[in-house]
Amino acid sequence: MNLADIKTVENLLKSKGFTFKKSLGQNFLIDSSVCPRMAESFCDENCGVLEIGPGFGVLTAELAKRAKKVVAIELDERLREILPITLGEFSNVQIIFGDAMKLDIAKIIEEKFYDCESVSICANLPYYITSPLIMMLLEKKLPVKYITVMVQKEAAERLCAEVGSRESGAVTVAVDYYSKANILFGVGRNSFHPAPNVDSAVIQLEIRKTPPIKLKNEEFFFKFIKACFAQRRKTLVNTVSNTLGIGKDKIKEVLSLCGLSETVRSEQLKMEELASISDSLFRK
Ligand code: SAM
Image (spheres, rainbow, N blue to C red):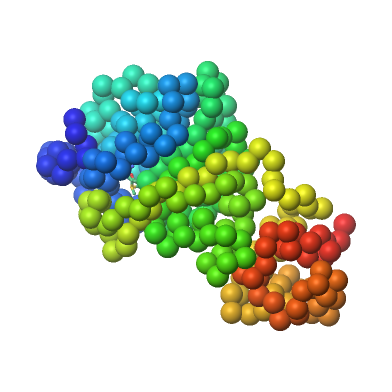
């Protein structure tokens, strides 16, 4: 079954009475070149793939052709009767119905992929959970090699921005701390059905074995980073003071010790500079 063919999709919709739910970010891929490219960017015959949001299974099928095993998590119960039809030819695919934000992903990886040489995560992500889902996957420090996901073009630019550039934000720092991130290719809005109002891009996060910097306290660093970007128009002194309740004089003193101006903005700082400030502000 060619799931990237609009006629096939329309026939399925009609025969099962399926209607797209905007609230679940249901824009399904109908461009036959995109899913093979995503799958080929990281799959091999010994790897396991955890997919989030298979929809009709258009990406799942391309992953199943190239990987040892695919486990896909889908929230929409209405797909229970559709996925066995669309993916019936693949014996290496298993679907778990549930919310990817709530399920124990570490346990799923441990139980399902014990016989795979490596595990990667792949998805055409529902846009409403892009950043929280990526943050959740990174913070859990899962034993995965790559996270390859389709996201909105603007989100791709922010997630893969250089720390210290105008596009960077708290999520950019987290992505760079846990992985090496790259935009693989852009995907136009007409590659989806129904077509969204924005273009997309596929990004790939190659998970680091060790972080690029050594921190006194990782938990405090991420609290500090969230505070740094909480009020984007304000200077670092003001946003961190307002958000974490640390005195402005203390922050100015730390900035001066780090050789930085007291009017500096968080998006102007490199990872090492952010780490030095965080380490100096951290109190045991
Ligand atoms: N993979 C398909 C494709 O590329 O055409 C569908 C992608 S569509 C953008 C997003 C999918 O994620 C939908 O099938 C939607 O039902 C599912 N989804 C939305 N929220 C979810 C969640 N919290 N957990 C798991 N799946 C979710």
